[in-house]
Image (cartoon, helix red, strand yellow):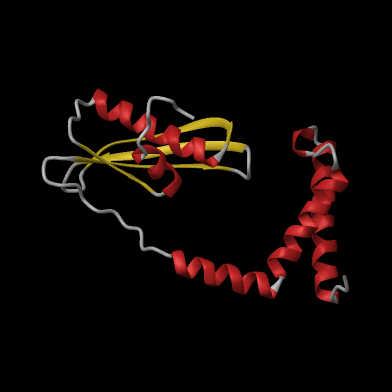
Length: 168
């Protein structure tokens, strides 16, 4: 593949940043962030850069994202209900994760909020753990009518799916 000078400079700079970070980590006694396979790591980062800078990929992803774009905002629950809004996130595919949420009344008044460190897990597991913790806290408050709002379509699909008694 023929690289432009800009791309070669960008890749070289990226590699130098990681090499410098690894040097500092080793020098200052924090080697936990140094990958075992440094060469493989740098190859992956190079592929990410090429993918990010590829004009055709950008155009395709922009078109795809525009087709699925939805406005997300808080909507109050019906009168007499409470709303649970949750979110979970994980760094990269299987990394440090966290979960959090807020429970509000039907006028948007804050009742409680929570956040938790989850250790290492996937983003979907973090999302589900956030919903689970929110449900537990809502129950502890005596909530009987609860409207759950989640920003993950995968979690919504899991929670609304009909099961025949055999969980996956």
